[in-house]
Amino acid sequence: MKSRKQFVILPVAASLLLLVMACSTTHYKEKADAEVYPIIAEKSLEVPGSPQDFTIDQEQTLSLEGLPTMEQEDETLGDTSPKEDGAYILSLEKALSVAVKRSREYQSQKENLYESALALTLQRHRFDPIFAGRFRGDYNRTTRDVERPTDAALIARELPDILERTGDLTGGTGALLDSYADIVEAAAALAGIADETRIDVVDERSVTGSSSLGFDLLLAGGARIAVDLTSNFLRYVTGDPRVATSSTLQATIAQPLLSGAGRDVVLENLTQAERTVLYQLRSFTRYRKNFAIDIANSYYRVLQNRDAVRNNWSGYLAFQDNAKRQRALAQAGRIKVAELGRNEQAELQARDRYIASVQNYADSLDQFKIKLGLSTDAPIVLDEQELTLLREKGLDHPNLAPEQAIEIALVSRLDLMIARDRVEDAERKLLVAANALQPDVTLVAQGRASSFGQDRFQSIDFERAEASIGLEVDPLFDRKAERNAYRSTLIDYARAVRDREEATDLIKLDVRQAWRDLQQAQVSYQIQQIGVQLNERRVREQELLFQAGRGSAIDQVDAQNSLIASQNELTAALVQHTIARLSFWRDMGILFIKEDGQWEDITDDNYSGGAAAESVEEGISPVS
Image 1 (cartoon, rainbow, N blue to C red):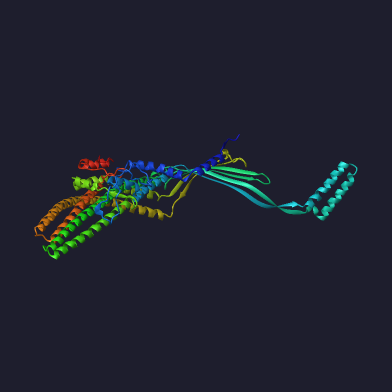
Image 2: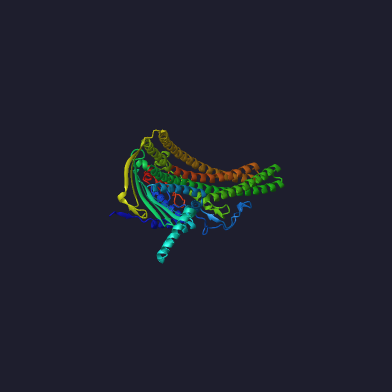
């Protein structure tokens, strides 16, 4: 008795077809997210300061409800700026939170990270069983010519038999009927009637079907296993109800022995994809630092422009008062007309500077809205208390030598980590390229079994199975492509080493420049503080001299202009130092950004020389 294993194909095929039809585009999106987000969360554990709750879903609407609003218009803005009465007041913390949710540039960076992880899912999938199926059914209609005897020929052939059988039934008259039958048969033969034929067109219809179901599996060692089950079906639905079916089960195992063999070679694309996600996450984490500084810089620059409006407004009012006094003195004959003209000209220039500063403020606010991802029509203003807090806090100047900062940066900068890892990538690719120079030698094992009989496609006859094993050898006489690839890989390795060395030097340069910028910003702020004090005293002195009749219009104008300029420069110096300090922490690699985009505050107590470097090297944030 033959042993046969039953394979029921149709129910499996129908189930798979229904499953595919039930899948929607939303399903595929959710499946991709469910696979990508855990990858990013897994890699985030290796990158200090990376976001923990990552998503590329962006808020379509933004609610500003609950924020404080402007109670009344600021008279210093005049009539040339959009009305701000009732506008929402946006703090720096809220602005950073809005930016990470709404910024178009920030969203693009998140999508880049997502796509790198999405590419990794495909590389991982290469080592999963890859199932494939194909099903086809056809209804066929064909015609063919069939040669058949004519009706007269059929009668001529059948009439003698009928007469003979009639004679048998009637008895006595049988001999006579037999004679008639002979005469009819002879006449038909003589006339050729019995051999007459006609051509009929026969319509044949049939149903055919075929199916193929199998899987392909790539192993880490390079072996590839392929299994395929094919079935064919034929049935005529007209004429002879013939049925013809067959099935074949085939399995193949191919194992490279030289070129393409080995875990390191086979897994190279997967390894690189894994590291690419890590690199992209490091780049995104560093981008978040730059982004936070950029938003803070833009925020403070808008407030700086707003402060310049207020300073220019105060200066314009002062020039107006001076001009009024000058006119009164000129009418009294106490000053020359030329002195009055100088003050009136200074008044016009002050008004022009004021109007220009209002426009500059409005432009910078609209640009900031776009940077946040908001419409320029969004009813928001920035919180001037943020600038007040900066002034009250004064300079927060780090007490750190540049060499200490460089020591920390060399172990904490994420871009330097990438440059170092690129050298390792190049080393791996050298091994892969060298492996490709070897001949293609593949051990191949195959097995095949078909169905038994003509109408039992579901029964596979394993007793009649076929099997083979052998070697496939391709000596690769033409190795130019492989040679060129190997030489290019050598160049890539040398380039990666140079890039690593250059990245180290550039980071040292970044830190030293950031430290120098910070020192310069500190000195500039201190100078501007003194400048404001001197100019305030100078303005008071000129007012007293003028009241005593010993002052001049040009001295008053110069004093007032110098005071306005020094006030604006003091605000600019304070903002510059704040941004320089944040940039210094960023270039050291120890500026850490929270989920809402706000940075962690850093003080001298958060690090002590190499202690900060060691904490970063261990993946621990050096900030509380």
